[in-house]
Image 1 (cartoon, one colour):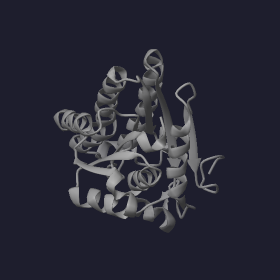
Image 2 (tube, rainbow, N blue to C red):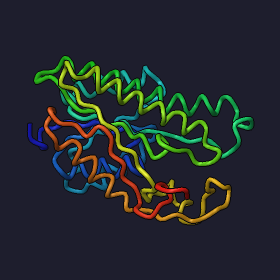
Image 3 (tube, rainbow, N blue to C red):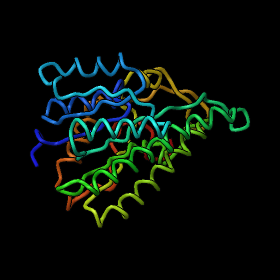
Image 4 (tube, rainbow, N blue to C red):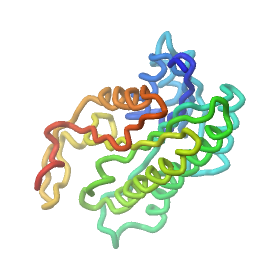
Length: 252
């Protein structure tokens, strides 16, 4: 199946990494369902694709709501008839406080979006990929560097991202019989409006505050495009893509 015939779904497509990946996919001929909660920012993503904007379909979706996700996949079936790639990207964080100071409702919001939302979308994608002909597809989960190591005062975000790794492994195993490949991309310090604070200074493991290097978010988009360029008999199980000089490797 050529890229021009491929159907993709990107969650969190209205900004940041989701926007960058969506634009790259649309410009490479994918037809892309642009999912997120804000219609205005989703439309901005579509318009930014320029001559390739016709490849985008805006679908307002709250991934933390299973009913909303079911409606999203109904729209995908009606408009495209199949799905070849799910980029499970939507995610939120919580205020940087110690565990005892984190309100339970804020914890639940992060879990509902980052973990439950990823499962709802993966569950629906798995079912569609299993029943479609030709059968199969690819799921790429956004794990983040936080799937490996935490930043200080990030218990909700880090816990969900560690859980994403388990989700990835189970999907990869359970998908073998149905030609469904699942991999994970762990991203560190991609420059987006949400990560602008990183260049100004963020807490380190010793609680000192230091600026950190960042990388162009287009590197992430290129990586996702590469991961999906493989035939379904090959899979990038885990990819870490990060700013070369960020304090991840070593003692920091």
